[in-house]
Structure formats: C-alpha cells, structure tokens
Image (cartoon, rainbow, N blue to C red; front, side):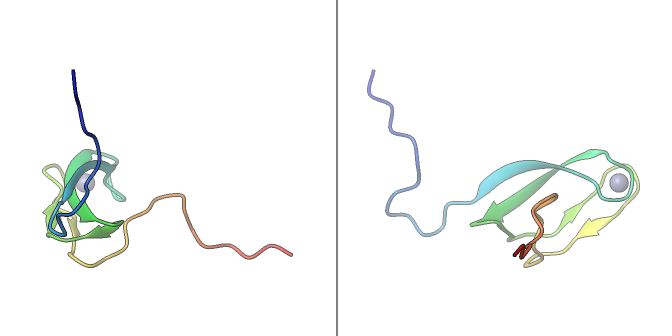
Length: 66
Ligand SMILES: [Zn+2]
C-alpha cells in the first residue's frame, strides 16, 4: 500500500478540524489552513461564530518565559 500523507504542492488544502466551542464546549467542524480559520464556523448548539481569519488554537497562547 502506498499511502501518501501530507499536503505537498497544493496551496489550497484545507484541514477539517474539530474544535470545542469556546462558549458551550460543543464540538464544531472548522476549516483551517495553517492554523487559521478559512471559513466561518457556526456552533450548532449556541450559535457562536468563529469567524474566518481568526486564530483558533486553544491552549496555545504565545508565552515568553525567561
Ligand atoms: Zn457553542
């Protein structure tokens, strides 16, 4: 079996990620590209909208520890 994983070449490969709604915790499908949301995602439960271009990386705040 030859299975090639990864996104080589194509610059328009979106990832479908499951994220927890920041408001109610419901799982929602979000399309991302390189960590950025590329399409508005609406929570099916509470209606919270994650807007495109927003950075949605829960638990990955930039920290500077020295
Ligand atoms: Zn929600």
